[in-house]
Length: 127
Image 1 (cartoon, helix red, strand yellow):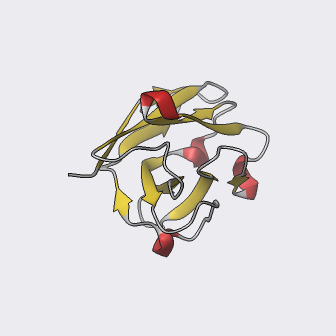
Image 2 (cartoon, one colour; image 1 turned 90 degrees about the vertical axis):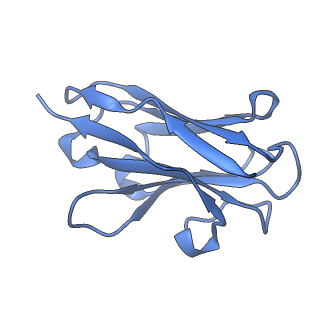
């Protein structure tokens, strides 16, 4: 059974950092069509693409609001993708989801492209 499990969320003060993890099971991230995306949804707002990474790890993309603050990486040996979030702002508060696109190797920020989703982890940025 294909499954994604996020972890690492929590409460952090503005300017702080968190690292989210997305652990995959039931499929191997080392295979060709295994792009991973991170999305977030704040209360009353639509789900938004935050970052994505291609199967090889060489291609990444970020929404403008997090460029320079967030980085995405993957450790295929651990079957895990990470989202490092630095200089966090209150507007980053949301439930963060990771998702797997098993159709193409490249990175896409369109949520409709993704086949499997995790359950989400809450990130709250507040003083």
